Structures are given as C-alpha cells and as structure tokens.
Length: 433
Image 1 (cartoon, rainbow, N blue to C red):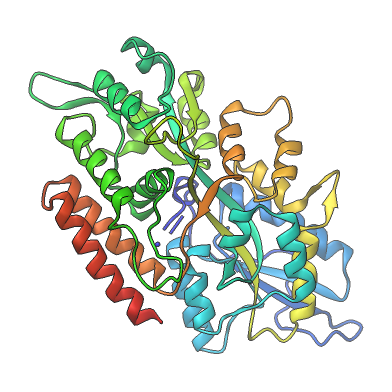
Image 2 (tube, rainbow, N blue to C red):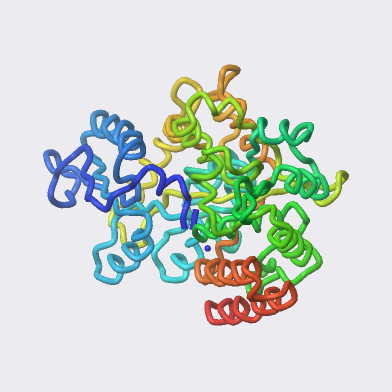
C-alpha cells in the first residue's frame, strides 16, 4: 500500500535531485586515521523543509565524529522503493535505508533489511508506542527505528458545520451522515459546491487511507493476522463500503474533486486524513485556518472502541552494509539519544509538522502552546492500527484502491467490490509468500 504515498511529501514538492550532506568523501573508508568510514543514507528527504530538517543532525554527527561520517542521498518518494531494489540488485545498496513501512515485508523477503540487533530492538520496543513498533516489525521481528508516524483523524470546518446547524464534530457514523447531508450543497445544475464528507480518488494513500481508518474504527482489518489473505469481506468491511456508497449516492461526497484543494478553499465540511496535513493547511489557509478543527475518527456506535489507521517510516540497516555496527550506532544517536528531553528525530519531525511514535517526546515538544489540532493525532498513537506491511502489501493497496473507486463511481455494487477485492488481494497474497 504508500504514505504512496504520504501526501505530505507531494505537498512539500520533493524533487529527484541527489543530496549530499556532511562529509563529501567519494568512497567508504576503512576506519584508519585519516580515512573515516563513510555511511550512506538513502531517503526521500530531498528538498525543502525535509532536506533542511535532516541536514541539521547529519551535520551535527559529522562535526562530532571523526571515525564515522554520514553522507545522505535522496530520491523522489515515488522512486524510492524501486531505487532500493535496483541498487541492491546492482550491488550498490546504501548502508542506511529510510523506507515506508508498508514495504518492509517486501524488503525483508528480498534480503534488503537487516534485523535490529537485540539491544536496539529492545530500545525500540521500550521507547515507542505499539503502532510504531508494529509498523517497524515483520513477523514479530524489529527491523529499524520508527521515524515519521502518521495517524488518521477527522478534519472539519467549524464554519460550515455551524452554518448548517450542526453542533460540533460527529462522534458516530449516524452523526457523520447527518452532518454530511446537512452541509452538502449543489448549484441548480447539480454541480458540487460543498462536499459534506470528502471522499477523494486522488492517490493510494488518500483513497485507501480514508477507508482503512473507517474500517479500523469499525473493528475490522484489511489483511488477516497471518498476512496471507484479505479480511475486508467482513461485516465491518461491508459497513464501510455501504457508508461510502450512500454518501456518494446521496450527493454528500464527490470523489472526483481534489479534496486537498477543496477543503482548504472551504468547499468540504469534513474529511478523514493524516496529521501531516495540519501544517500544510496552516500555510494554505492563513487566517481561515481558525475554522479548522480535528476530532477522532467517528465510530459506528457511541460505545465502540476507538481505533484508526497509522502509517510510518523507519530507518534501518542494509544487509549489504560493511559497517552495520556503526550504522546502528548512528541510528541510535539520531532516534533514541535525548537532547533537551527529546530525541533528535522527534525534534526533526515536529519541525515539519509531523510526529514520531515516541509519545513522551511529542508531548514535550508540542507543549502547552502547540497547535491543538495536533493533539488528536498524538492521542491516536495509543490506539492506532499500523498499516499491513506483509509481502505484496503495496500491490494489495493498489488493488483495494481500484475496487473502492469502482464502488464510488457505481461500476461495482458493494457485494461486487467486496468479492473482487477479496479475489484479487488473496491472489496477490498467495503469490507473495
């Protein structure tokens, strides 16, 4: 499945330019005096805020360490998985990788990711929340330090709800539907002026992320516990597909509209998305951002157990690295060592409007004066369900998106979409093991 793409990476306009930070040594050293070990780190932090945020701690490490230097390289997010696989096959894999956790099963199966040594696995299991540890693990084994964590919640426009006579964000699906129908508006020609609830076929992460957040809130799951088949053809999956189809059929949702533009323009009353969007909305909306609120994903019933979707990235070590001990030590320094009460990675993520899976760090960094709209995403770290990362997960996510869009456009009924998803994803899961 990506955050495809964490939408934040598109919003920040990442380029495919090669980034070199810190030591510019042209080759890996031996560790002898005057010839330091040079570790390479490949990520998608290629430009803008992300490039600058990563540059700081890398430069700090290089200034403090003579024997081990770090050099970063970056590619556009859409090229990242292919780059990992192609470089590995060509014998040019980098020491440290920064993959989207959705790909972990595929990378482990391909022999690219090295399991975390016991002392690092213990540090990760102790220092991070369950969703972050789960995202960084495959078959119960930890493969790296979680970095960016995204949880999903309900964004809403206070003004649009208020104008429609809706008193606050919905807590249940019946309340969500009622608010969506009351806030939706069309012109006399049937064109959508305001979506009550924004469903968007923009990309994998948007389409699938919204649906899986609702599925988890309903107590369902996309992939079975053993990772060998889909579990969406269930009462919970049917309830989610029914809900989305009703919202489209009754005119409260228009999936063809770019929800990222429409919400910022006051043309969407409510939408489920990840926490990265908060900083982006603040920049886009200016003073109108005061109308934006965030609440937990509504539950089918008021007495339900909270759950939502989480996605993430990790920093791990390549099986082909000649200096794994040094690579793990750099990752511990970046992700676990505390400076002024928090890790460097947590400070890095907060600086670009994101979170890590270290809830204690996040509470410290957000503080009393932080944006209150980030709090629901922080709270969700305690109950979020990590995106499945079994082998074949990326293709399974794409197949799910295809069937969701067919449902939204009326090409498939709810029954047909569930059956088609089960058949296609089960076939992919069986091929991937």
